[in-house]
Length: 152
Image (spheres, rainbow, N blue to C red):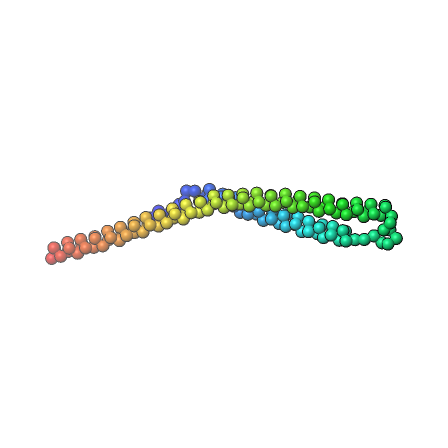
């Protein structure tokens, strides 16, 4: 009996490696998106605190102090906007990585299913061959017994 050989085994291993690589890229992209989200949330918290901050009583009438406070608040809002933009870009990248992972998984699963189907067919054929062999042995034994009976 010959051994089972899946001729596309190299391609299957290649697709499995591509799938693992895509999963790694996806995990990194999701981690990056989460990091950007944390940074944005921290910046939003700082901006909220800045909005609630008040000048000391002696500086409340000073136009320079008021302008400085307004510039500080505006700067924090720009930081929040920049972090939000980075977070959205990281989310888009994570989505692209997710789609690439899905495609790699799909092509690998197709090869896995083909491998399983071919193995099943090979096993069925091996089983039929074995049954033919056993039937042949049984028929040979019956023929021998009949031959021995006729000779007696």
